[in-house]
Image 1 (tube, rainbow, N blue to C red):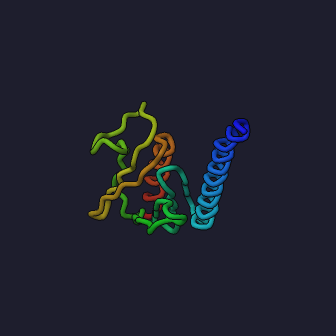
Image 2: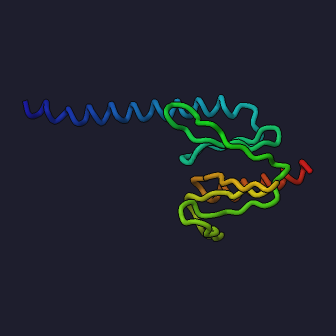
Length: 136
């Protein structure tokens, strides 16, 4: 009887892992549909982002769907700063890794785009600045 009871926690762990895997697969499928036709797209633990027709949109995955996206028009982009995600206005150094955010400034508007990886954020800075110059 005790040997049978030892399998119950393993069964619960299996069910939990299966449910988490299903949620991740659903998130990725929704992202593929949302980002279809995008010139530039990303999906990470901080959310999803896409660049379509000169408009950068980003949102978070909550409650089984992507929440209302925020957006920024790339041709208004004047400055992109790489900042740490949690510590106010501290800029990120070149050696820093981990979660961060891009501060997009332009047209009198300032918005923050979160990233889970600083390396990817640095690549996005180069791409966004190149595309904003092309839009002008």
